Image 1: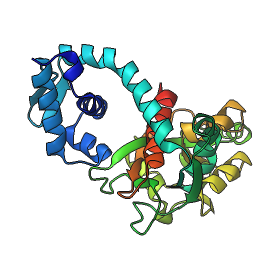
Image 2: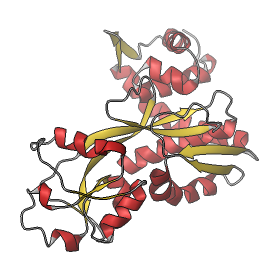
Image 3: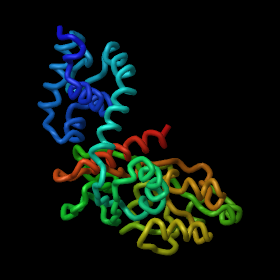
Length: 292
């Protein structure tokens, strides 16, 4: 067994990513290496430490007791080290980030002040895109794409799950005589062919309800503003409208469930600079804090 000071710090970093992802394949995608390279790093780390860190079975991995203990004790130090490296590498660099419009205006922009405080020398250029799936022609360093449920996410890294339910203005809700009668409330449209409403209904106890569709809008954000004005109910994820809920501008339609309608996925360019890695890591950490 090697002495502790001879154990590879890079292997420990890879271990932390694998433990976070729960998969060699997903960890490889995040690190921009092959799954085989990740596996070799973990095997070498286990050999050098003389400890088994993961149990492997049926193409699945899980931390051993020793692995859990090692992760718990090494994670704070790794975060400090990675933050120091990111700060040094990110100085004076610019990045382009492409994010869906509604996610940008309602979620990302309010958080960018935190990123600027942490990395003042990195300039973030934000571009919005309302297409679904990953736009292959983009030159962005970091991209957040949206995949509707049923579309192939493949091995993409899921950043946020889009779990939606109907929301409407409290004044409109007060006029609804029967909350269970969905057809009595105008359903606002903001997707092609209303796929979101159809998918939501299919995953409820009332899949055959015929909704009464109201206005049609080309952006989720515009449909949300229409809902706030009392024009009808709109499908949304709670995290997107957290401010509106807190201010009493919107409320959930009672008795309606949340349904997984899609995924926001995180992608980084192969030609990205170090600042892009800093931004991607900050996004992941921000989502983890927000979800807890």
